[in-house]
Image 1 (tube, rainbow, N blue to C red):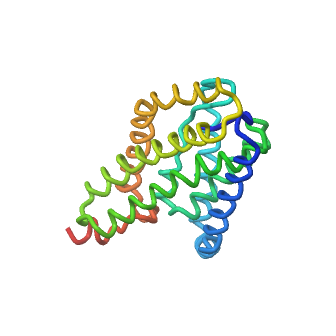
Image 2 (spheres, helix red, strand yellow):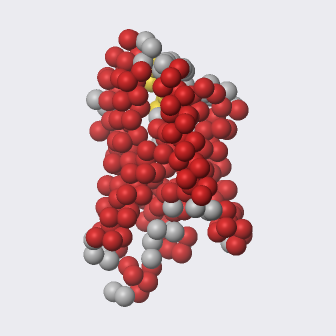
Length: 223
């Protein structure tokens, strides 16, 4: 989902921009470009994935004037490339949306926060829990990370958007619409989970080395 019109208070737009910028800075501090420079195949996969997700963002439903609904793919990008590169991809896609006139530039920070920071953070936490606490089992990784994790990341992104509206909406009607939208979040979660799980299943079967969060030695070779 993406907020397309400035229905939030200016102070909240500024705050979201600062928070998003801080997380982008944190992602850059991990120096993810080193892996890209060292692996030309990874460069191609990352750029291709970013462009493909940007194209999928064009397939969107205009729920109301200020809100558009679409698949985010943030959880999928986080699982494949890890959170720093995933956040950079989502940031680049949001910038492209601004340049294409899909969203207004004051909303860039808000949308990076909702579609990038929040779901990537949730997905990263779930992956860490699976990686450190749960058994080294392929089905555990698939269902907890790919299906449950992506669904929970989608829920967190939706609730963050609704929370921002409740915190600083400038239009009472927009706030009412946001609360109505929250009731449909359980219907949007399965679609993101299904797409993420399906694509991850294909990658884990044919190209497990492409998935940065997956250790094929732990999950496959030792079984």
